[in-house]
Length: 403
Image 1 (cartoon, rainbow, N blue to C red):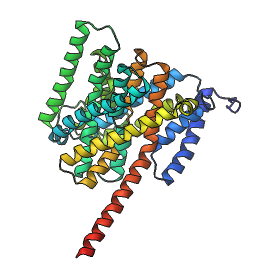
Image 2 (tube, rainbow, N blue to C red; image 1 turned 90 degrees about the vertical axis):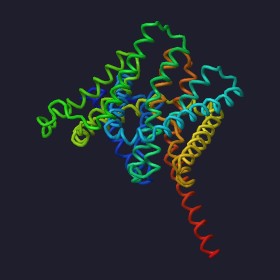
Image 3 (cartoon, helix red, strand yellow; image 1 turned 60 degrees about the horizontal axis):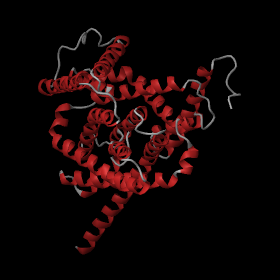
Image 4 (cartoon, helix red, strand yellow; image 1 turned 90 degrees about the horizontal axis):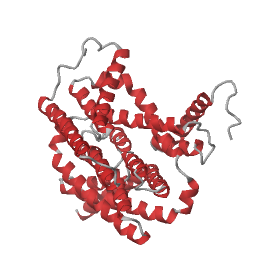
């Protein structure tokens, strides 16, 4: 299937050209039907992967670049977050995320019993479905102008709490998977957690950091801006890795530091293209691992869990958002926004696979499930939005008729 690769260039250059063309075509089509580019990336990954045209020569390199994309994604999330506003919603974030995690595990448990799954696999899948997609939802919140509205802030708080939760989840999975742990490694994780929490606490108290290195000197130097931003991003990731916790969390804290230094705007403009490229590679690498034949053979289990994911996540988050003062229409819409499974769940799957908690079957099942929810989510949100608008119109009409 590789007969059309350009003979004068290496396969990597040819692959980049093919992916670029496919992204433009798929992106144009999806924009016409108001769907995000993330869906295009996953579909392109399926097309060029080993189960499609088999165009990827070095899959490990693609996975590595994809992991870099996740780190950059969380660095950007940190840069875009007003920590003071987030902390005002800590009760919603903490209790809402905790309730969702518990009920997600119970939901998967009820299905896992029917199919004879092990308790460890049930727990991993429960953690997987509890995390929503920051990449999808932040983009939708921005496009729909919800960032400054109550529902937008509430959804953002829940997403950030889920993102921070990835660190203890990965630690728990490591222990559950029988990974050898020593007192030293556990103590190191605790010290690392306290270290990053202290940075977050410091930022929340100071609100603005004036000691950002070379801030004035590089304000108009775009080349140095890129390297300073990457330094904060990957230094945070490296420190987190040394402590044995999530690199994404370290990058997130690095982003918070940049935001507190009031450098968000010019840093965002300088490295935005890096984020686009690496995030695209991450989702393409996930799509390349999806086996359509596997989905066809296991569609009953996938559909069962898919329905459980949407019903559970939508219901739980709608009730939580309503409990914290949002009207039912907004709460239901917020529940739809949070109903899918997020990109950090891929990290949970990969960790579980490496620890042999998940078999190859279990890994294929979970990445297929996550990808399906991300692809379906924009349509699901759109349908929910139309139903809410129609119901509101009917309610207003009935009220006018009574008068």
